[in-house]
Length: 303
Image (cartoon, rainbow, N blue to C red):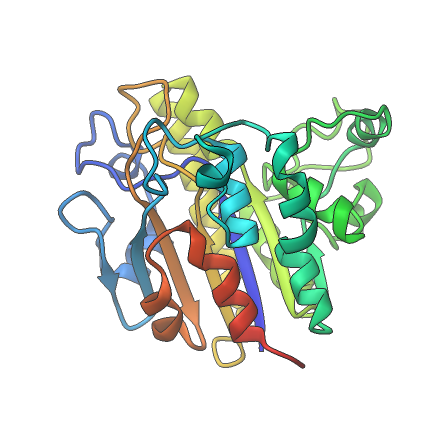
């Protein structure tokens, strides 16, 4: 049994309105094929098909204000209501006061204690390591969790061996980031690479943050492109996926891209999409961001 967790930043369940919601503008053949043509929206939030389950997950954590990445992601990757502990939503980075919680309860460490092999599949350019080695504390929850759990961050060398995945999927900017040897690929190929990584580990995490960036931009063409790349990526991944021995989970930290009428985050629920072995059991446990990590840990158990 293995689990692949795809974290997509800033994706909520919005209105079925193509004027503001790029999910209803984009060509999404993989998603529509898997759901029987349905896209989650305010009046159709829960989808069960022969291939997948999509359930709405509360991202507000029963706190006022707009959900933010720092506390939302801390909640996803620790299983603790970070916004309530901190007293409010906070972001984009986790507040220092939550560092102990992230150290002790992050998903990588909890699975390591159970003897599970873990990997964070994103590749980082050299300038990122120069930035982190400068002593900054402004790290995302995912990279901070890796640092605190001793999980190595992957580099351009790993990407060249197809043993990592670029955050933009298609490796479009690595040349200008100082890595000319890294050439662009298709999103479908990137999906193949993620599966080959996941096949060698008990738990794999990959983070796609362009969705949140597109939401803040309020540019429909950009948002549509970001979603179409993600759909192509998923199509490639599921061409290789082992449905009998693997569980795939996709979840977000807050809404954003589903409503381009506003530049801010939203209080919409986020879609939790589950495919593979045990998908119905997993879907039944998810009500908010709080349940993601405990359910993954429980389903993996001990090797």
